[in-house]
Structure formats: C-alpha cells, structure tokens
Length: 617
Image (cartoon, rainbow, N blue to C red; front, side, top):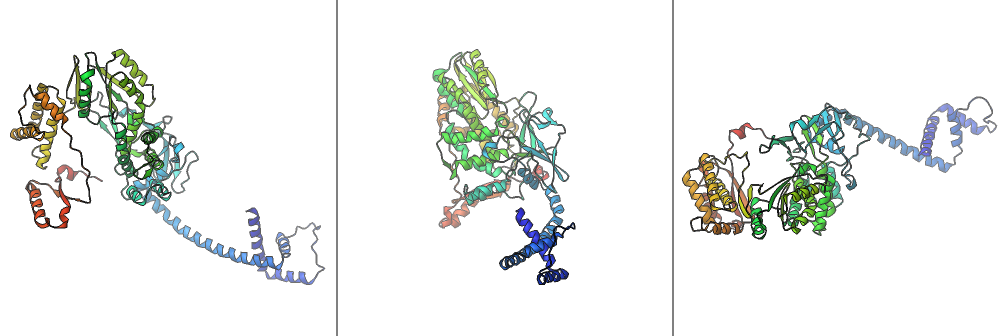
C-alpha cells in the first residue's frame, strides 16, 4: 500500500510538470544537447520534482502507456469521489433533524440500546450488560450489575430497595456515536432475525410472523403491584411487554416449548388445586397417618433469580431429555439462539431512566415462565427422588411447592436446609405443620384423615360480576356454575360443602343476583353432571366422587378455515340477536357451500365511563 501511494504521488507530480510550458521546453533542450549533465556534488539541493521527472523519463514506451491509462482511471475515481462527498454533505445537513426525531421516538431509542449491548454469541450470554438513559442529545450507559450504585433490585421489590444515586456514567454523543471500548456490540431484533433467515435457520413465513412493526414498538415500563395478602405489603415488579420488540419471539417460543415442558414434568407439577385434590385422595388411602406432615415451600423471587445463562441451558437440557432434534420445523440450535436473544434483551424505563435487565427474565414476557419452570425442574430432581423413596408426595406449581411426608419435623427442617444449598440462586422458605394452604386449596391432617376445603386469602372480598351489568347472561350463569363446582370438588365433607355454598350465595346476593336465579343455577350444576338425586349427608361422598371423576371437557383447537367469528357490541336490546342470526343463517345458507363454515357469535362490551375516560396506547 505504501509503494502504491508513492507511485500515485509521482504520477501527480508528472501531471503538474507536463502542464508547465517552460519545463517542457527544458526537456526538449535536454534531449537535443547530450553534454548537459546534472552534478550531484554541488551543494545546492536539487529540486525533488526535477529528480523524480528525470527518473521517470527513463521508463520505456510501454510503461508510459500504462501510466497514461492509470492516470485516466485515477481521474475518473477522483470524479466519483467528488460526487460521493457531495451526497454525504447533503445527508449530514439532514442529520440534526433526524437525530432530534430519533430521541423523541421511544422505539428508535430502543434500537440504539440494542446496538450497544454485548455480543449474542453463546459463550458470552452471562456477561453484565449496560443500560442507557436519555438526556438531551446524550445517552448514558449505566451498568446495573451489583457493583454499581444505580440499581433496581427486582428480587425484593419494596419502595426502599430502589437506589437511584448518581453513578459515573459513560456518555455517547449521538452526533458521532462511538461505542465505548468497554462494551461490545450486538444485533437489534430486526437485524438478528435477518441474519437467522439468511442462514436458513427459519423460514420466510416464520420470519414474517416474528417480525416487528417499528411504528408499533414501544419501550416498556416498570411498575409495581402490591401483594396485599402478605405482611408488610411487598411489591411485585411487572414489566409490561406487550409492545416490546422481542414479544413476538417470546410468544412464539413459549407456544412451542411449554407443551414440551408439560409433557416432561407431568408427574411432578400441577396446574390447579383440583389436580392436587385428586393426587392427595389416592396418596392418603395408604400413606396418611396421624404424624404425617404437610409442608408448603415458596421459592423466593424465582423469575428474577434464574440466571440467564443457566435458564437458556435448561431449555437445551429439556430438549435433550426428550431426545428432540427439531421442534416445529426449527433446529435446536435456532431455538436456543432465539431464546438467548429474548432473555438478554429486556429493556424498560423507570422514573425517566432506562434500564437493561441483566439477571432473570421479565415478568411480562411469556417465555420467562417456561425458562423458570425448566430451571426448577432440573433443580428439584434430587428432592423428588428423595421424597418418593420415602413414600411421600411432591408437587410444584411454578414457585410454590407442596409435599406430604411421614418424617419427623426435625428431619424435614434439616433436609430443607440441605436443599437450600443445592443452588445459590434458589432460596426456599417453608411452612410445616398438620395444615397447609396451597393455591386455593386448604388441606388438613385430622388424626390421619384427609380434610380439604376452599381456601380464601385474607385479602379476599366477595366481588363478582354485578347482575345488572351489561354482559350476556351466560357469563353470569358460568360464574355460579364454576364456583359451586369448585365447592363440590374441594369440600371433603357435606357440612363443609353447605358452608361454602351459603358463602357463595351471600356473595352473589351482595352483587344483586336474584335468589331464584341463584337457586336455579345450583340445580343446573347437578343436572350437567348427570346427577338426578338430591344431596344429603349419606350420599354426598358418592356424588362428590362422581363429580371428581367426571371427564373434563378438553379445549378444542379452533380451525380458522372452517370457523367464522362474528363480533357485535352487546346491549340489553341484543339479547335475542344470536337466535335470530342463526335462524337467518340457516334460512339463506342452509343448502349453500358456505354453510360448511360455522359462524360463532362473540360479544364486545359497551364502553363504560371508565373506558371512555381512560387513554390507552
């Protein structure tokens, strides 16, 4: 390169000399007079241009021809460079206005944030990542690792745990954005998905499904919901991610992976109190004793304590455990890369500052639940094996664990303390005794006999959908049906069932449900379960067991090729509309091929005063 620059410099000097008429005449004289020489021994310094010219004139005619062609090419390149410089000057003039718009646009800020995070390569996914705050035309990079002073502790979120003391920020001027030397670069959501589609890891259709609309993307915000049922009213951190750039990828992966987790953890997890009731009934027949202990364990701050690296690796372990090479047409490598990208790109704003979550997953991201479940599944395997070998019962729902065991209390406390040392990220807090509350189920060991009923938290208030609200009548009927059905399933004695039914009746009366309407729906519960006899203390156990054993109606997936949804705004004058609609449909389309499409009517609620006064984006 140095030699080429030197040669180009010589060409430029030759051009200048050839354009000088006096110099050309001197050259002619030099050719005519052979006695003219240059004495290098003189003290006067020879002109470097003359020396360069004399040396170059010794080139043969072929070399001079090549030089002429290169000179012509260089002139053309110089012309092209001039045009490009002119174009760049025009673009630079419009940069200030564009940057001003970018600062005001939250989605543009988010794209800038994504460009200054760390590399997404697999071995580097657990490095502390910087976050940014916008201030005028500058972006501050603030590391939210525990060693810095500006942090938001999402593990024990109370108002006093937020330290917003001023850090020593790194600033980036958006007029000339230079990435600091202590940060790495990564892809934005759009460029990342472009790379994986170009490498044929996802199809074009999948890319279009996951692609985001830059006009709809918003930087999410952090807010807190009080846990009114817990002492001290701690706060639960929520990140509203409905318009986050990674929300589509997160939903796609969650729909892909959650059924696989449910299949893998079928024998150790429950999704409702009713499932636990059925398991307890079977287990208590041969294992319930007077000294049987009931224990509930809470996993502290699971979502924010799961490390991002190990969380993504747990998904890989699940897929390996199920011996899968592809899921939904995607290779395992692609699924892991997408999962890593979602977990590492959680940004949010709080009190005017912008943050990047470097530990755990966002509470508002669907994939976070599946990652946390997988992480807990592999953590608890030793515990499950130990409980099962002792003839106990173990089940988990996300971060709540229930177990029943015939151990001395002292031994159980000792074992839980040992489990607390299995993983530094998992902290367990236990509640051991002869009674336990798990989800909405209250469980007791009454001298070796299982007793269950409905559990309601201290913060419970009897508020249901008011009877005079403008909602379809079937919604109000379904409330009574589901609540009484739960009472049948949970209440192990007839007297407890009667108590629960009367509590429900009082709550419905407070919400202006007519007593005749309530009584009729109570009767319909038994009719729908094919029970035609009245309840009493003698037949309650038999009828209850029949209701528990009744098959649960599975949710049928919707075939959108054969179903058409018709939405209409519901009001009191539209009560008879569904029947009239179906009658007209059968009349005009009964023998038409269009009748193969099933119309399903769906209602929209009337905008009440709250909806009209609330501004939503």
